[in-house]
Image 1 (cartoon, rainbow, N blue to C red):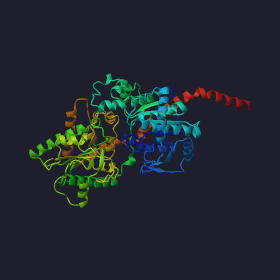
Image 2: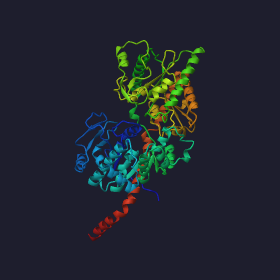
Image 3: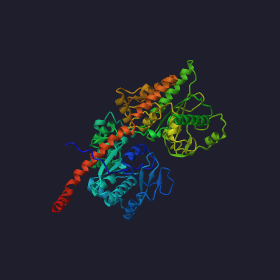
Image 4: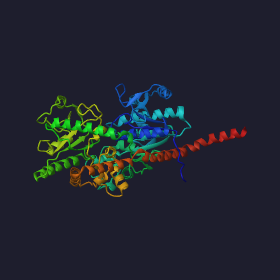
Amino acid sequence: MEQKLLKPDYIFEASWEVCNKVGGIYTVLSSRAKTLQTKFSDHVIFVGPDVWKEKPNALFVEDEVLLADWRKAAEKQGLGVRIGRWQVPGMPIAVLVDFEPFFEIKDALYAAAWNDFGVDSLRAYGDYDESSMFSYAAGRFVEIVFKSFLEGQRVVYQAHEWMSGLGMLHLAKNAPAVATIFTTHATSIGRSIAGNNKQLYAYFSGYNGDQMAAELSMEAKHSIEKQSAHHADCFTTVSRFTDRECAQLLDKLADVVLPNGFESDFVPKKTGFARWRKEARATILNVVSQLVGETLPADTLIVSTSGRNDFRCKGFDVYLEAMAQLNAQLKQRQADGGKRESVLALIEVPCWTKEARTDLRERIDSGVQAEGALADPMITHTLFNQNEDHILCLIKQMGLWNTPNDPVKVVLVPCYLEGNDGIFNLPYYQLLTANDLSLYPSYYEPWGYTPLESCAFNTPCITTDLSGFGQWVNEVLGHEGTLQDGVRVIPRTDGNYYEVAADMCACITEMLDMKAAEVDEVRKNAAALAAQAQWKHFIKHYYEAYAVALNKAAERVAPSAAPKRRKACAKKQAK
């Protein structure tokens, strides 16, 4: 029987990354907020962890009047919350929960999760406890609000990743009328297999999630993720690529696939974009010129990669191999009589950063171009683990020393770029506008926000067909994406590391050889692809997920509601 397209009256979304910029899920939620806010107007409530407490958080502004009755009801039952606005387009309501008091009862909570849903938390370690206590607090808050104010309304609770699973399961047990959605953006086991240098794809059909969880000491995270997927009213993931992974490792296909979109409001219009790009390029070239002790030309081709610090999954190893190959090729081109070319390759990846380099800051502040490179002229900030950082060590191992004879300069920017890093002092999106090409040679990428963001900011990019975004591009185009399309989608396997690097080199060389009109066309094509991935096109999949969950919840609570309906009918007839 065809399900009704039920619409929610209230939507709660729980994630560790609400008002807490950590990774790609932050972008998923924050960029989608305006679209949902326009549709549901303050009936969309994002629930996140109160990890900032008294410290300043530019992403959240508390409003003690907003939903004060909800806050008081929660406090009355021992749950501290702060309610305010998330400082992103749409300014949605955000609720930050204080989860620390629940550490005292975590063993009882884990026991209940085992008894009720078979969640095995016995071998939990690392961030499992912190995430689970947040998750429980988020679910408990919605339970209190639902029972106090919203009973009879259609309420959806969407939990993102294993970190939000415990609270969703608590709601399933204690407030069964609430429709639940569980979204995995990447399975914990899939990411762990890839990150531990195992061949994920060659042996994919032979992997068993439970077995691999034991081998990789991931039992607790895998268990909460798997049981959340099986017990949610609607299980979702972000791409067909990840759906296949969920079927293999979680024994559950998604009910709905929710591709990640982007909001055009994040991109400045033409005049503003040109101003951003001019300032960003000048800033970047000045910083790197002072770092390496030579003036980089204004027409330097700037390329970059970025994302979470996941060395193999994000393909940072392939990126550096490509830069080493390119450096050698451009040296040869010049030796063969070609002009001297300049390429700047940035790696914008948060590492264990200590502080901005004082020696570099002094050079920048002097306003005079320094001669001679600083020590370690391939990094802009100092690290606590300067001699052990994987990326920095590989840069040196590959001989990318940024000497005057190197046409390719490689620079690690190891911090979050929020406009206050002490060196560039510009936010990531503005620095992104400086790029001529962005490179994301991912080995494991369930979706791929960074290449989508790059395209949205009019910058062509390279990704692989092991990313959900890359697969989506190929589907939209009807063929393997090329640089002329705005997105080059490189086929990647477990074993074609050097071929991928060579393909990237060829794309960069192609960009160097393009005329200005050709570059403009490629940039327009990249933006056109991104326009097809805006939330206004993808939000329909969320509406479908809401309907699936609400119909399932309606079926579940219908039997218990039947006696009440019969009583109401009898009263009407008596009158």
